[in-house]
Amino acid sequence: MLWELFVAFLKIGFSSFGGGYAAIAMIQYEVESHNWMTAAEFQEIVSIAGMAPGPIATNSATLIGYHIGGIYGAVLSTLGVVFPSFFIIVIVATFLSRIHHNQWVKSSFYGLRPIIASLIAYAALHFGFMGKSAPLLDWSTLATLLICAGSLYGMIKYKLHPVTVIVASGLAGIVLF
Image (cartoon, rainbow, N blue to C red; front, top):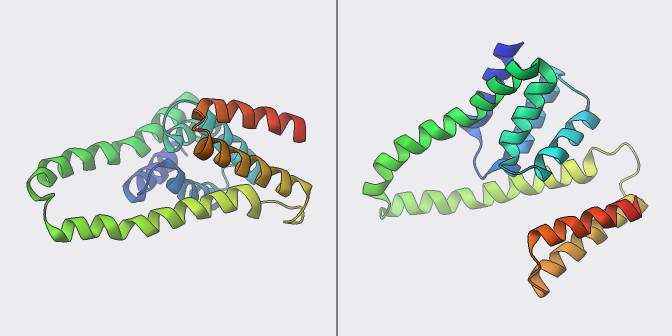
């Protein structure tokens, strides 16, 4: 079991591009394919991981690992998801400093942008709406969209600090749900 945790998060670490939110879809796939937890437990862990300081993928790996294998599971899943990034950064930094002006390299990074954006959008839609057993259009969906729109509006129009938006959204969630 612990070995499976390490290998699963090692795969996620090696194949995730675009940050933690883009990796959530891959984490969910691994969790579901191994039947490690229910969809509700997974959503709860991702919610906690998103609110905790640090990268959401690392926090999710730690919490899922702890849920599955205790302290050893938490350590191994965290190492699994972090090691590939560390390894790749050391290797890439060595070579990228020499070739970062190359047109092929620049084009590759621009080509990854739409993929990363779509992975984040998929995670947001699936986590927020597609995993519901209730009808897609109900009062909770409307309330969620209102909180999202209000948060976005506050950050863009009034330049609100993200912590202020998080606290206000949490309070709105308490009131609405």
